Image (cartoon, rainbow, N blue to C red; front, side):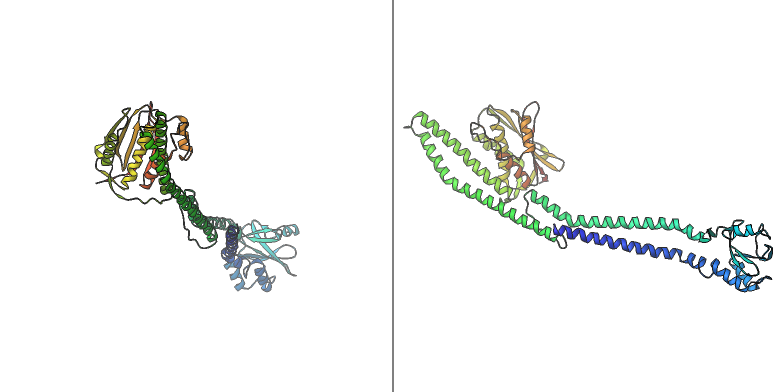
Length: 455
């Protein structure tokens, strides 16, 4: 939690610094945009300064020619009113401006406009100096004045500053989000890998390094636990093998003994057959553990699946299976020469588990078809039967629960689910996939899909 707090605090400080920089940049842009207006309208040529300059040289007879040129240069007109309101002289006065004023007229325009022209006045002992500026050049409010250019620049300034600020905030958000995702993505991926039992090793520097160390510690603990579990299963399997072999041996001798009664021979045969199932269960459990924790090395070789299926089918028929089961094989022409780089022993085991699964769930007999076909860049191996199929409950259990030691029945036939789990693990070890689905109107289809390689 401390690392998270430190990580978040760093980004909050970064955002605060960025906001301060944005504020400083806005102030800098403001002065850059308005400095010319401010220097022009509030500097040496401002109304106040021009009134002082003109009043300093003005008399009741007029102003020097040099001052007239300066007024003309700045587009300023001027007039000088006597105490009785008569115009004594004028410079560039626009048409429509009266040449005589009452006290009320002077009171009105001295604080604002004269015929739409912003005017500014300066009182002298001999009269009243009036300077008039172009229309829309100044906005006067109760004696104060504001540059029209200044106010005209306010909306574009606010728009530009707003767009710039929003753009910068979005860029900062985007870059910060990308940085956080980039930093957290390896951790999230590692946690996901851990959830699937895959060990990880992270190497991250910075604020998230402590979290990465925690993930690495969790991975090491899980690896040690998985290794201990696998070793325990392997050790138990090894320890059971010897006494189980002795039980099977004595049971076989008793079942074949001519001196034993019929009941004893039948019971001995039951002990022997169930011992065989226990042996197969122990072997399956050991193999599942080795595959799950990647302790089963794959003896990779070039395997032609069509040849493997034919060989398996021949061996199964020669082993003397019940006549209640009809076995057929179907190899598509486009899959005849298809090969895999894999472990032939494990692939053969997966096929056998699927066939035995069909037989086990259909004790009354069924037809079993082994097919091999190419579909695009995939090689599809299917084991299909026309037996009892999958009930809705079984389908739900296959989808929602790990198919591992889930069920036994009253007859101790040990339908533990390890067979299908082994099939799935063998498929995944060969970069393939496994699926099982019902066949209408009845039956079941188990499918193994592998990447296609042609010889």
